[in-house]
Length: 539
Image (cartoon, rainbow, N blue to C red; front, top):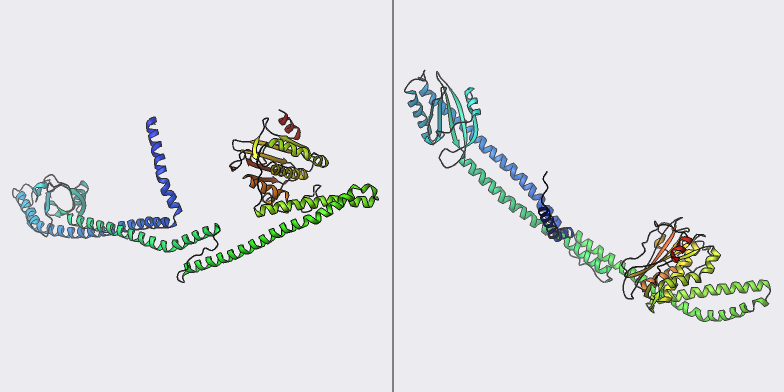
């Protein structure tokens, strides 16, 4: 097969792309509009049905007209055969000189009689032919028809002949055998112009009626669909407004039909949702106010208890062993209580919208090193090796150092707590617009569905709460709020027995938003040991 030229392939490629771009708005409009799809489907289905009906009706009427004309033509031809037989019965030899004259007279008389066909041809078995129409000198019936007539039959056949010199026209040719002393064959040519005109008129009327019917069905479908689609569109717009927070929006109820009941049910649902949301907002506001008030009110007695506990703790060596141990436990629990109080106060700041950033250009890798150094004692107690892998050059980002350090401290301490003695790897990476810090442990991991709940307040994957750190359950929730305050993201993924991965992504410049993270959120990457990560940091 010969390959098409390059310019032709390019032309067809550009044409296909242009056609695709031109058709795209129509395709999008078709997909977005229920009314358009219903009307288009109705038009297509009605067009197919009208075409089938038109073909069936036209075929049936055409067959009926031609069959009726054929029966009449055969009957007229047989009458003409009888008239011709009366005048040709006396001839016994084809050499008779008057036979040709008689044959010509017979066909002329038959052609002039309006009862019979206008064109008559009479032929002897020897091939002598008499024609009633001078323009039909070169016209002969088909060989198949001549064979049927020669077999002593009366046969008919349709064909196109140019008899009047005005071009080819449809004719019905009927041939019959005349059984006399001499064998004769009579052929009558019946024009079908009137039948053809009737069939053309029928097809034209069917086409016009079909087009009108299709358009009418399209209009009816559009009107009916509009009656149904309009309330649905109104419900969609109202639901969008409700989703946007406009809880007072309602649908207009018209009449008492199914659509009206739908609008009423929708309005009732909206009212229930509005009342429920208001009740939840009030409860949430009361809860936030309670948390904030309790946190602030506890600061004063906690300060007094702290001073007394510090005094006892400083003089613990003067106490007996039981009192000394009680003093140490009191100091430890006061520290935990103070940490919880600080986290509650921080949560209340986020809830009230008073949390703010103190942005500074800092090295995020250095913050990660400081966090690891500060948690080295905890890592030693848990038997966990923590390593940091970061680029050689400094990763400068405009962030709040205190909040970023708090996020990383929560993530690393959480990883150490759940590492089950395995290594914890911290990876720092950057792109043109963002910086990411990944904290990966190879401990117990997360069960399916827990990755979405680790940032919930007071939620723990381990319900026993039997951990060395004894956290409050607010650390990851505060970390997520800190990340959002930077217009960043904090994500988690984990599998049982494969560990957990937390990825913190922050924009390099304050005020920007994170689009993509330099570190993908997946566990299927290579598992490097602590020593390998340390070598990567040293390279």
